[in-house]
Length: 194
Image (tube, rainbow, N blue to C red):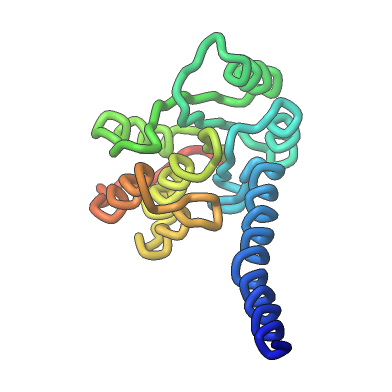
């Protein structure tokens, strides 16, 4: 009987280690992404990525990193509080603001890609590229930046679309991974003023 009880306790301990500990770690990781706004450098001093920042965080990051441009991948959303706040903060700090509607569950069309490359070329730097969570659309844009602007190989740039930033390459958002794998860079070099 005591052997059976001992085995039962041992299994419960293993179950705890295999299920609850990873769940706690995952929860802490997701909380960190949410608290930080998923703000991370793409290329230090040149380009940053994030999720939708609140007013105080946006203003703090724009000042601290001397950001000169913001690219909103959620598209123009006039009348929405988050959008109007973002526009107001950018105006207040004389930061250039760009809107580009990208989907987190659909392939970017040629017009979107053309405009994205144009913004990469013309936007004053440093630039902050953001979407809602900073995981999917921002991840694709960051990967494209690494290839087009920084000249990195796609295999290295692909790391911008990773679980590290909250991107899971399954379900609807996997279309972004597929797009990036199939995408062939067209010689785009950037000459935006720093």
